[in-house]
Image (spheres, rainbow over the protein chains, first blue to last red):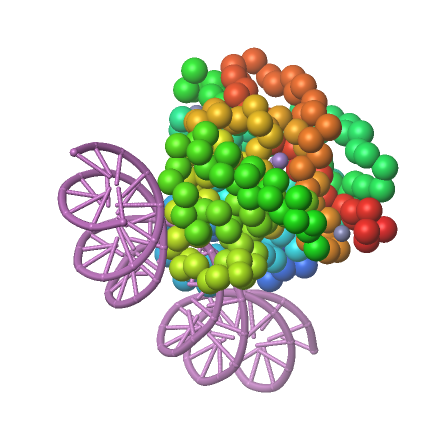
Length: 147
Length: 147
DNA sequence: CAAACTTTTGCAACTAAGTTGCAAAGATAC
DNA sequence: GTATCTTTGCAACTTAGTTGCAAAAGTTTG
Ligand SMILES: [Mn+2]
Ligand SMILES: [Mn+2]
Ligand SMILES: [Zn+2]
Ligand SMILES: [Zn+2]
């Protein structure tokens, strides 16, 4: 349960993020953004559809995630089982330019997926001819809670 | 175009792989396996359905890929756009136990996905509590041909 | 090599995921 | 508060993936 002050702070943060991304303030966007701010795990499309207080149409969720991606509010996490998860970007990400060069962890027991913001992706030496632009590192195993 | 000797060698290899995996020899399995042996890129389900000489049912392709996975004949490659690709395992993979600890490269221009067998996944130091079992590294950028 | 047996395949029918066009509802600007 | 522009929900659609089942193909045995 959130204290009133924290609640106000979070609502302000939501408005800030939407405003600096030049997005109009709608219930759907606020709810979905709140979900991300409240959760320390990455969320699947499914989670988002299920967990908002008010139900939003599938299509609305798709479109919201898409525009949040474009604006650099969230980033995707590819997982071995081919289910995309979404997580908040840190402040450095701007419109059309992500800088999420951290490692992700997926728990095989509980399925929780987290950003390890402090673990940078290691440098990878590639054979001649390959020009790398992006390196995704996804570690799977058991998380703190499931050990 | 394959020389007759190479052709015979490949057909033998196909039979060998199916036999040591204790799979019965069927046209579908032979065709799909041949596709993997002929291609130096990873293949999507779609590619496989499209490229076999004889057309096989979607369901057959799904089931074949599934059993090839279980038997350690192929492994999956997760990509940022959430499309699974499949590639041959090296000989070290056995039934239910994969050892594909190499880096994968996805070209953003042509979409080709390759196993960089010689580039091992780097060690990743995780915060306390996380127990890693598997590390997936997918590098995307431009490949040799597209530079 | 043919009968008996086992496994695989294709089909139909289904669920889930994702996309598009459009009119109505909502947000913003004046 | 009204005009304008944006977003939403709905319907309708495409694509991806799953399951049960009977027919077809593969394997084993004598
Ligand atoms: Mn992340
Ligand atoms: Mn590989
Ligand atoms: Zn866990
Ligand atoms: Zn390329």
